[in-house]
Length: 373
Ligand code: DGT
Ligand code: MG
Image 1 (cartoon, rainbow, N blue to C red):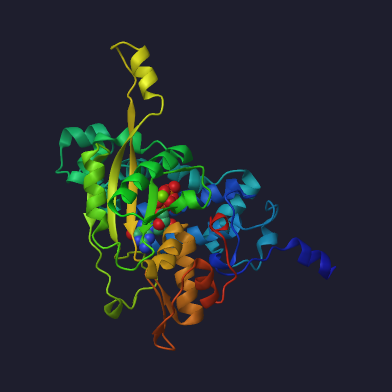
Image 2: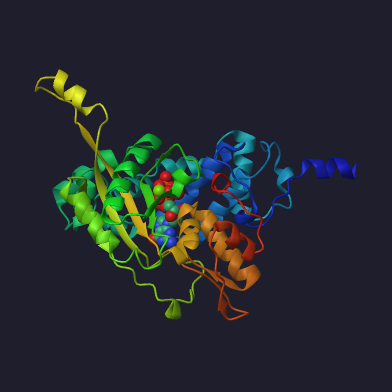
């Protein structure tokens, strides 16, 4: 009797960084529903609610099979009353009225549309909605002041909302690698973000640049950017300087995602592979556009921080957040994309690989493809 019962109840560890979460899961109807509510909370800047739904979503992603009954979930972590109610509705009726109502709501639709403009966050979108701006036409006709990023975002709206494929990411990688090596022979370029976790598409392409000799990476990024620009690859770019100082950077907010690497947010002009053929064969009328805009992020790390940067930029966002929560709550350590600090020993813990960081944290190593929490 008791054996039967325990067979029917799921069990997963508390933190997403203790679990192996692949891209595919057995409960997509449930996880997509919770993801909508999480997204809605994030768009409304209700961070606590957003995190609660993300954690619940991640627990369901980690289950070894589809959920059949609510009672199977007894004892699982991170499933609050609200999430359980949504799951119950879907198990019983096939849909959640709250999720459906959210998807239909004018505010949700407008927030999603407006924050889909590069450079527009939840705050700006909310301000525009109060001004009666719910779509791109209203935005263009009522003309609030746009900064340069937002202007570029609006101009390339359609392209930037088309998923980037892995092939496009690799193509951009070849272009960037060539330029990086030209500026600094021996430098290394690594594809990070969702593509490193095995995602077939992404909303942008993220790269981490380093050099095996500490310090050689200093000053690299502005040169890379100006070379890319002179070769016509950049439609927009904003570069921020490295402001990390170990002595003053003891990360005080383990939940914060911000880091201080030298970084370039850009919009890349990517030529279509078939461009030459199409342009040649097609005369002049209604020639298809021969290039597309793609969001590309470049981050530079000194080799001494590379493992931390790699871990911090591979994601998923929830996996990162859970790693920092684990470090802080369970290990009295503070993890950032620069370093790991042990508050009991009052010292930094060095690491040359992601494996070493997991070991410092007393966690089983989880490879990128299983960090899709
Ligand atoms: P995507 O691009 O939507 O397909 O999915 P991801 O997972 O590539 O997400 P993305 O590009 O927003 O960010 C990649 C990872 O980098 C993400 O898991 C968290 C991390 N990340 C993003 N922005 C920052 C930042 O400002 N600081 C730090 N430390 N990490 C960041
Ligand atoms: Mg990305």
